Length: 378
Image (cartoon, rainbow, N blue to C red; front, side):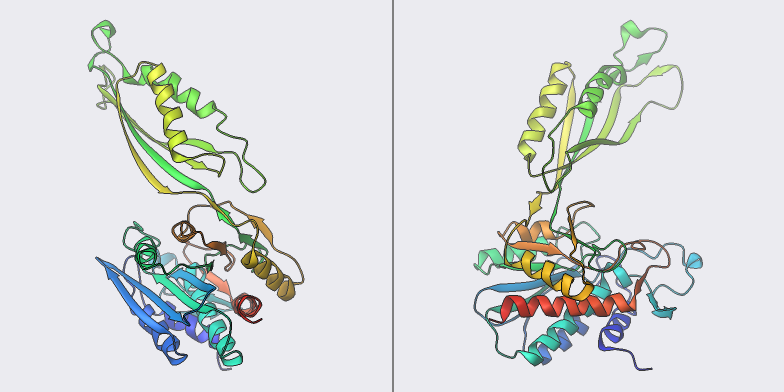
């Protein structure tokens, strides 16, 4: 049996090893398809990262598909049923690294766009693709820099679907209409090293900071809201000591993270943490890593179109959630863009034997095409 257009493209993308930040030729494969339907293509290479901005049309509204060609490492190859970069079909599932996260989505986007343009060569607004090879990595030279470039020339995306694997059991049962923000603190509490038998001559930073950490961990940061759970303070790493039992350590290193809702700002979080640390009279250094603001699309043309398209394909409306980690949607949302994440089932992402239902990929492409028609055809 001949592969469908979506399956064929997904397989060709998986064949190209593209571990972050390597693109492996995936974007060139997409470019060949997009240029055939008259997209104007810009290759934006920043340092070690390959990015693609492709646009068809010049008028508003500007709708974009966004995603990434990079994948995480395969892990122990011997634990895979089949080689991770040799796409294999087993009982209706396509196996291979990136099948679900997110080369399957990319294939569904491209084919949906080809079919839409064939049926609607003239439409209202513009179509675009924003693709990076650095979503799974440091995210420094990827989508965020493309967005910076677009903003500088006042090329603003009005609506965007990010193809991250949002679904839980079947494609489209869950869409992400927002994400929490993320901020990490690297705290070094300073003490005075000494002998445990002479604590009066030392200052134990562990003893000093534990009450402050307990206070921060038990603090009610907010109550969340209709779309977001309450903000959570989580300690992720602790380090202190010389490895022996008779030395009070001189420093105590603590790493913590907060996934925060739209009820808080990064500045508010910082000020509250500083207040607690200072209240406990600690001597410390604190460095911050800010990964992104929370964003939410709770109304608008895009949300209506996606919910309706999913309902038409599945005969069931999707659940709207903001759970999970961060995505490149956070960079796009800062343009004032309506952003929705709609992609395959996420059960096997980043695991050995990553796979995606072939039937779900076909449904996903159908959903994407319906969204385009609802937004761009009047």
